[in-house]
Amino acid sequence: MKDKKRIYLSSPHMGDKEFGFVAEAFETNWIAPVGPHVDAFEKEFCELTGSKYAVALSSGSAAIHLALILLNVQRDDEVICSSLTFSASANPIVYQAAIPVFVDSENATWNMDVRYLKEAIQDRIKKGKKPKAVVLTHLYGQSADIDSILEVCNQYNIPLIEDAAESVGAYYKEKHTGTLGKFGVFSFNGNKIITTSSGGMLVSGDKDLIQKARFFATQARDPAPHYQHSQIGYNYRLSNVLAGIGRGQLRVLEERVKSRRANFEFYERELGSLPGVQFMPEAEFGRSNRWLTCLTIEPSEFGATREDVRLALESENIEARPLWKPLHLQPVFKDCPYYGTGVSEEIFDKGLCLPSGSNLNGQDLQRVVKVFHQVYKNETI
Ligand SMILES: *Cc1c(COP(=O)(O)O)cnc(C)c1O
Image 1 (cartoon, helix red, strand yellow):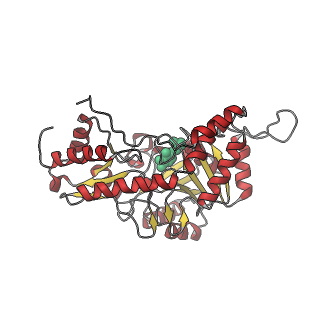
Image 2: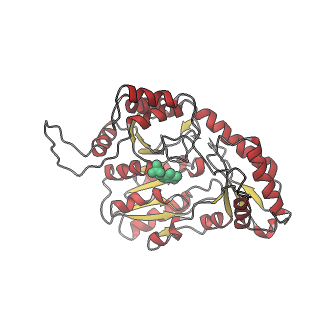
Image 3: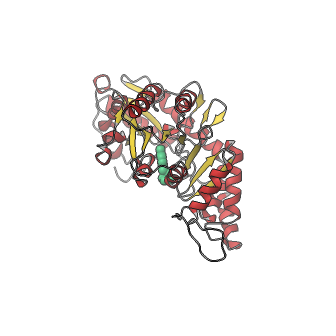
């Protein structure tokens, strides 16, 4: 059935302004990691999210890395990190030769459980080392319970980095995710809710820190007419061409959130009453952007596993994916400390992400639902 049109998990969806901004970059010859679109993208992003200061970067990973550098994370330091997340949340901790300490999820939001966070901090302190920072992911566009997490961070005076890479357009109470910690990190990679093909943003309420981030992101050049360096820098700035795409994408963000939420509601309506199928919960305190529609399948009730469903979808040329495999189970992080009771493991074992792009049409969504029902009824496809 490979002749059927491929349905992707989450593909880029341009509006009608992006190309004009890119053309403007060409016409004015600002083809560099600096220029008017970069400045405007930062300013417009701040306005949209309520961030105070922002620096546009080449990726979300670069943003996390710079946040850790600015918090002075160094060799053998420990940094607490959500376990149920993409590896890019934790990789920059290792770039600094520091050690990730993973913390399990709660069932209510699938995000970091504040009880295990507290346990981790207390135990690390008891073992002789206070964690240098906390990297908190807002998973699949669903805000973590930030107030209670911040309370614990503040109690121990540990700075919070919000990994809001997946949660552009998602809110905690009335505040945009990523604006409540010491730093917020956003990604505009190709499969995110809005994209610049690749790109990221680091935000903070601290002007000085963002100025320093800009310095480190442009090879740490000291002020001098020649090239003068007293510190090691990075080439982490966003291209002015790509910032043009970003400016266009910001203008359609709210529409994209609405479409993704509508996808979720459609799937939930069509599949939510099947035995053993449970959709990712949405916490009362916020608005998820429903970047990806995620659900869990209990095989003993549904009569098939999430992998059966995924393979059936694939045979119909439909891309679905398991959830992120918890980082404490990843071979590369196997020696890192972990605090929890297996909540993230169970979510991973049963979890599946369905095609969720804002550019899917009704027919695409019907195709997904049909396969799902066929697997449930045990029909061969
Ligand atoms: C995508 C993503 C990142 C990394 O962003 P890039 O722009 O791809 O470097 C970090 N954390 C999470 C949770 C992500 O989903």
